[in-house]
Length: 112
Image: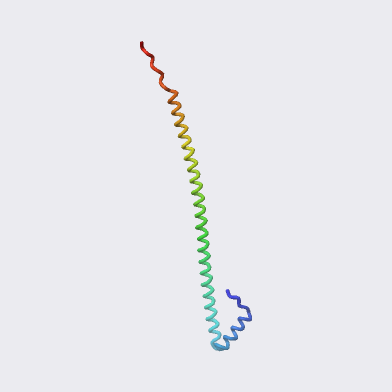
């Protein structure tokens, strides 16, 4: 978290010994250690929550991309099927019209 070396810790301890005194120093050190532990735990929790939110956002984006890709493929398939069906219907209509033209009734024999 902080880049504090051995020399800095010794300097802080010496100043604390002079300011606080030797009687209260162990209690203050213990309390300070507890507070630092709590702060580290809080930072760890917040970091974990932020990482989880980032991961969830990435998952949402991935799912959205997959849904868009699937929708595009489905639309392409539907348009292809629709055009093929229209071609078949057109061919059937043409065949039906040609068949009806070739089956014109022959003229009835005249009775004279």
